[in-house]
Image (cartoon, rainbow, N blue to C red; front, side):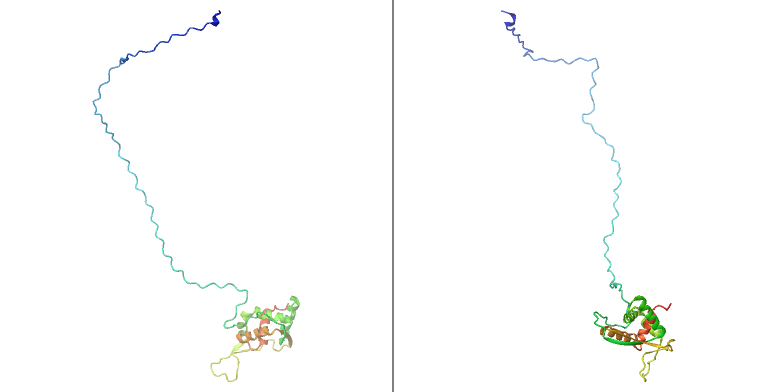
Length: 222
């Protein structure tokens, strides 16, 4: 048979080591043996004293909540009004609704004042009654002073022997001018307001009231 057909011989197993204990000798060195340590076995560690730490800065104590002072009583501010301020002592009842113009009034105006009224009415495209009412409303807060300027005050300290009003209108510079009668119509409600204004301002008549308002309201003639 060929060598390829034979089994390879089994290697012999050998036991490594021995059951006898082995004592190892210390390895000799050329260095001198170290001297025995005579210091005590316990070592005391000394530590440096702790560095003084800065005392914590205490925050400044904020003052306790102050007791809120009682707010002064204030009166509620008045809202600005778009209407003229009423004269002192006057309290006319304003018109809420106006009916048809059925109450007729006849005014007597001097020639120069009548011309200014007509010129303004035509320029603005208004009617005579509208211009009269606008003039009275626009000058309402000034009427007491305007009437007082063109009148004299009557001292009623004693008895009013002749039933004179508190103030009497002076003769105007246009008293000698020709007069124009101006008939207009207003609603009963507006007529009542005009009457109240005459009484509150001390005007001698509605005609004087309207003439005073027109003279202050109408622009001077060009």
